[in-house]
Amino acid sequence: MDHPRAATGTFRLVAVKQALLALALAASAAALPAHAGLFDDEEARKAIVDLRARVAQQDENNKARLAELSSTKAELLEQLGQLRRTLLEMNTQLEALRTDMAKLRGSDEQRTKELADLQRLQKDLSQSLDDRLRRFEPVKVTLDGREFTVDPAEKRSFDEAIAIIRTGEFDKAVAALNAFQGRYPDSGYRDAARFWLGNAQYGKRDYKEAIAVFRAFVSAAPQHPRAPEALLALANSQAELKDARAARRTLDELIKAYPQSEAAQAGKERLASIK
Image 1 (cartoon, rainbow, N blue to C red):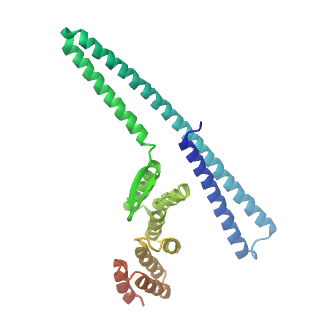
Image 2: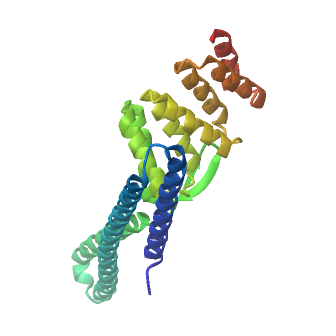
């Protein structure tokens, strides 16, 4: 019988492949009409062949990653099985010691010490087993007022990306958050990852990308607690691009949609400074 986590990993791989192919085809479909006047049929065929090659390479990379994870998981499961067998053996030895102690009261002190040593060893092995099992168990996370369940690896990946933002290495943060979204497209962290990706784009002064990300975030999650912040950051990005009219429209939208938010109050002050 296949292990449930292996099935989950396979499902995620299929999901990633489908998402990548859909994005690739969408990008291709969007690009061809806009540049029909620039490329002839031969160039279009080359672009399609190149696109298919990249999708196929990504597919191979994903398969290799899944094979590597499956191998590691199998090794860990084997180790866990060995630990369980060891614990059973320890329990048998403990029972034998208890019997001996009842018969040999004269060596009580030595037997007690041996029993204590075995009990400590059993406790250490049990703790080690629990720690290993915990690496595969889903964990509950509360973020931005929402509670959801994620895999430990998923949580580590998101936390690492946020830690990179705090260091000010925005190029690395953008790469980490994009990789996270590709690996976990249906994650409970999805909205938060998009919000922080916009901030990372703003931090690296890629204002056009920041505008696109913040707008997508607000459109997808208008009730999210950070939606007002996203609109304020969007307006700031537009102002950085010297598009004062768009920035004023965005600030008006912020003040109207979220009048009680701190971002709206800051937006009023920002609006007065944009000429």
